[in-house]
Length: 66
Image (cartoon, rainbow, N blue to C red; front, side, top):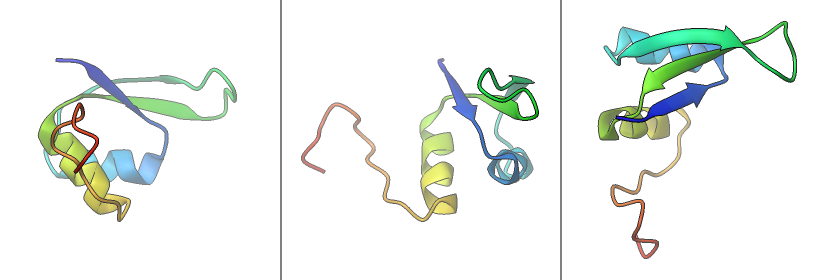
C-alpha cells in the first residue's frame, strides 16, 4: 500500500477517529511550524477524505469519465 500525506490537522484527527491506519507525522518542509500526517492510502481513506472535504470520490483513478 502507498502512503497519503494529510496537511490539515482536523482532517487527520477525524481520519484517526474513523479507524484509518496512521503511520507517522513529520515536519512540513515549507513551514516547520506545521506537521504532515501520513496514512496508509486505501480506497476507504479516499472515500472518507472526499466526505470530509465535501467532494466527490472516483473509485477508479484511471477512469476519468466518472
